[in-house]
Length: 196
Image 1 (cartoon, rainbow, N blue to C red):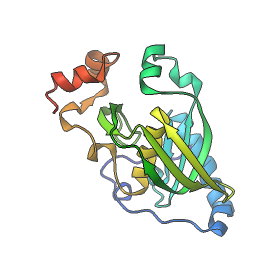
Image 2: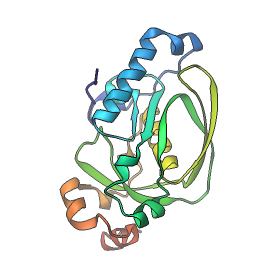
Image 3: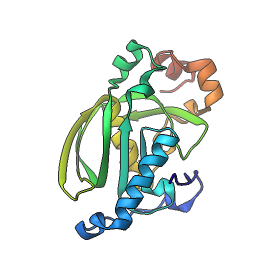
């Protein structure tokens, strides 16, 4: 069953989430929630979804960047973003344990800030430790778009939205993004919108 995705302004998106014990992770309640989050993310469609986005203040996120989501991007855009297929997986109690200095800037959206986008600086490479849906420890070293997704979802678990990290001058609705900036180098948007 797909769940309702809450939008910016809901307090649950701004609260610190609670971590889960092994027993809680393996409970039928949590396993059902994970399945519903997967279905909700795919139906949206999105590449990630955190529990606060469905009104649940727990440290759970699901991620999946499916190949079919890449169809609208050119090979050059995919290469520039470092975007590749990421199979479905679950992050529970995640933490970023290493982050590359410097960063990359691209337009980013969010299922809880529906209809808008902005340029957001993120680290190009991160190392994340978390538990999977079986309460097993996992360590991932990610770069490019996958690293961006991880940072975005972990921000949700800490009460942050991309609008807290964006270049405010670049915030626009999707209609203007499609009309004015899609397909153009990020540097051009930053320059024309007088960022920096």
